[in-house]
Amino acid sequence: MSGKAKDNQVKIDQSQVELDSKIDELTQTNKRLKRKIFDLYTIFEISRHLNTVLKTDDLLDAIILTIIGQMGINGAAIFSRMIGDESNFILARHRGITLETEGDIVLRGDGRLIKYISSEQSRTYDFAELSRDLSGCDDIRILEMCECELVIPMSLKNEICGLLLVTSKISQTPFFEDDRDFLLILANQLAASVENANLFEREKTAFEELRKTQEQLIQSEKLAALGQLSARVAHEVNNPLGIIKNYLELMSIETGENDHPSEYVGIVSEEVDRIARIVRQLLDFYRPDSGEEVETNISAVLEETLLLVSMHLEKKGLTVEQDFQVEPAMIMASPEQMKQVFLNLIMNATDFTPAGGTITVTLESDGDDLLIQFRDTGPGIPEEDLPRVFEPFFTTRKGASGTGLGLAVCKGIVQKYNGTISALNHSEGGAVFVIRIPRIKRENNDE
Image 1: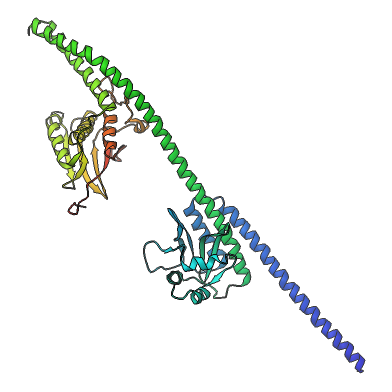
Image 2: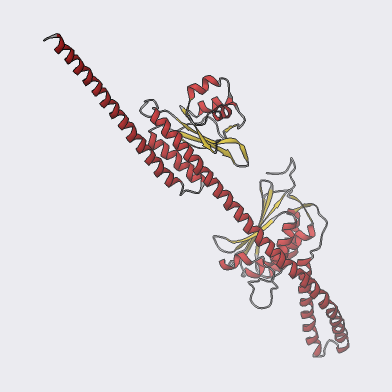
């Protein structure tokens, strides 16, 4: 072969090599573009799904599972802003990671790690790099405990709002550039999704608080109007009632014991007394006796109240069971007012419990509070009436025996001492009234 032919062949070979190189480069570029398209489509589908999840806990669980499945990794963890202290980050969710400690794991917002990552938020960070540049930092020990290989900032509006931590791949292959790009885009999308979920929950909580406040305001306005009316009516009714009562006593004396009209006088006198009790309850509801707040042993008040009604319960054929697990059970309250509450609840249970039934009174500790429960074995309270039992003038008693003020007065007294009272039906039958009230904590208090 001549020299010219050889030169031509060399050129042809070089052109073929360059062509093969170009084809290989285009093939690789095509693969990367396909991977990018696939990753973007995957992120779109993930984002579309995650944006429909508005409960933060469910969202974080979905994020973790998605990342583990998509990347083929051993585990992942998410640090997000702490509720009530948004300057710090708490380990909110993790999976596939064995932690050596219990309790909250927190990264300080002003710590070296967050400051380091905040300087460049549009990249992923290798644990080895962070460990080298932040040697001796407490946050590095936390990352090591989480077994992370990569740390990805969750950035929103150029501000770190969380960290995504991923462990090594199951295949033990390294994270390629496409993997890192995918995780970075996903982390930023997750930041928006988490922020949306947090905003939704905060808005939901604020709306619920607003609704409760509006209900309380409406109820307060109703009670204020009712109280003013009650005080006016009570004042106007008490005067003629006193006069009627006096003349009834004079009539009773003049007619004598054997005269028939004395029977009618006695009936009228009883009804006048009943009207007086209703008026007194109206006044108690609007302007309850202030009562001096003192350190009160609530178990002793319960004992006194039960002793007071023991004869009445015995006549009705009712059994009383008591279980007081706290002694002494001290609260700040008026003993007389608390006795009024207990007496009302016991008599209420007595009215609805058939002969042979049982009234159970329990007293126990629940953290900083005392729980007092009154349970009967009666028919219980109709479910539709449960939300209304503490409303003024609402009563489930048949006939004219109930005024519907007793439970309303009880609620007012209990709330005065920062307590709550609620009503429910026991699973085995009967009604249960539960009082929760703050106790006086002392070192020798039984827990």
